[in-house]
Image 1 (tube, rainbow, N blue to C red):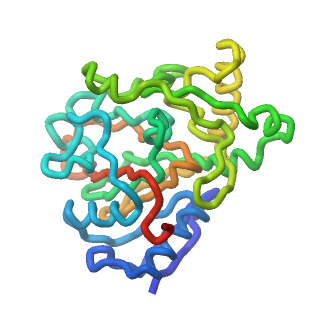
Image 2 (image 1 turned 45 degrees about the vertical axis):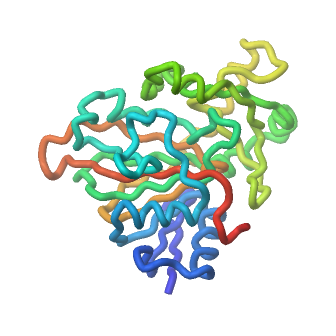
Length: 287
């Protein structure tokens, strides 16, 4: 039986009592999906999956989307990224810590990611957390005048455009013109209604926005900075310390997230290895 327990945090929930490897029934999947939309972040404990099973679970959430950085894809499973500090590629800081800045997955694309799933294979004794910020809660807490000001505004996004700004780490770089041409600048509403629940959230004000349509650059950057500073107040942030066999899922329409920097593994207690899938569209049970 599924058990849902709110986290000891401003938002988020823990789910136990499911065995994803054996498949979830439609009723169970609807319950898990509803839990994510209610809590914005969920962690499903104690799972044992191979890459094919993890991919099948990702497909239940939408259309798995291979990352634009094709050199990071898992061989044989291009929709899965392996992230952490255990592989040869992870010796490069830009790759190992490429997600250590606040962002929203695929906000640089016309159809952004709807959910992201991380499955913990190995976790270090300390460090390696994922930070999640609640953008629905942050929107609710805006002053009425700010809600009016941002209504209808469209921010322009490009992959990694804001990385390095305000002391952020620099994102994994686009390494060739083919990758760059796949992600031209795109607009998204700053006050964005959730595509399934309709609840409004501050959308993707870190990592990828670089301008606001119809607004002078200086004013646009000041507004984006103010919204980002508000959204990243401690009252809206949860830091997830993984346990081995966790599947963490966040709702990209209602969150920002950031990895925390980690060094190359130098012993069993320092190893971090996770599978990652981001999906687009709706879960099958919501169609």
